[in-house]
Amino acid sequence: MVKERARILVVGGGYVGMYTALRLQRRLKRELERGDVEITVVTPDPYMTYQPFLPEAAAGAISPRHVVVPLRRVLDRCRVVIGEATAIDHAKRTATITTLATEEEGTGGQLLTYDELVLAPGSVSRTLPVPGLADHGIGFKTVEEAIGLRNHVIEQMDIASSTRDPAIRDAALTFVFVGGGFAGVEALGELEDMARYAARYYHNVQPEDMKWILVEASDRILPEVGEEMGRYTVTELRRRNIDVRLRTRLESCADRVAVLSDGARFPTRTVVWTAGVKPHPVLAATDLPRNDRGRLKCTAELAVEGATHAWAAGDAAAVPDVTAAEPGRECAPNAQHALRQAKILADNIVHTLRAEPLQTYEHAYAGSVASLGLHKGVAHVYGRKIKGYPAWFMHRAYHLSRVPTFNRKARVLAEWTLAGLFKREIVSLGSLEHPRAEFELAAGGKPSQDPPVNPKGSS
Image (tube, rainbow, N blue to C red):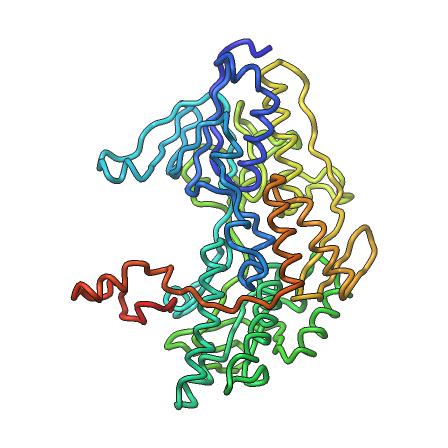
């Protein structure tokens, strides 16, 4: 029994935020019905994005609607607030929240009070002061970015097929990806696969005309799958005529020219930045302790060090890895840990409310799987190294089992089945990104984009 009414505030609607709230509403079902507990979830988006499916969504293998999980449907016993936490004063148990309504009202942020705080805002792209990056770079962390990138790639093929200027054609068919982690390699692999297939429908664009370049600052890619599988991935990508450049950095992309640290220069209209992430800025607007990387210092029970009734997990938290042989090692900020941490975090909040002993988060890293395009992949699971079709199949099976809700599982499986029976979709819907452009032109106005761009395109 919960001894007194508890207000639980969950900041973030990603892996940790959604799974924590989902488990809390299941464990505290009776208390919620009696009004003894209130769960509020503050998130900037009304859905949770299953990020491992973003590369396949970008390639058109999965509909973007099926990559996201609607929070209001799943968290039907929680109060879902679409907005962002801009500051948290844990000493006073208050959080400052801005929503679309507060912006319209012009009254500033509203204060929410709470008794238990769960900080799971996730991470944001870690950028560097590279000239031109802010103007021309494309991220790959959200479903909007994934679909925008798909539209952009197909649009570049349209430009290349219709221009007579060889410089414009060459720049349109040059695609530079910065970052050799999961996001960069999988996005590159899937999109190159899609573009290679789409080229058969262009009378004057061949797969050999396209340049795909992967830039990685370290001496290896996909470190999560091990050194041997990383080398195999480099070999496999190069066999597909993808230019993999290790120990290389992007120095500039100003004026639509990618300048690399090895002296190479590539005129390009596509620079995809996937070079890591950093903690969400809201963590700096709290009075809770952080480490030198900006993540919250946490205990093995997922409580914030030195702060009662404050919890964190996922990308925002520095959680000690109790299974590691080396002392002081932390859990990697990835989905494998986040999903399991959310379960323990929710259980420990319930234990706290019921004055029960807390659980310790303990999970040994099982391994990783990565897709390199249709029927191609690599995996390093429980010490076993797998490549090719078996690794690709394992990648799909694992993530199908992990995507939330039976509804999403069934829809994704149906799409994969239909994709095996019918041809790929290669349509660009760039106009979706500027839905009012057509009407503005018809009404005699001017497109609102600055600088001026194709009003029906994505770039």
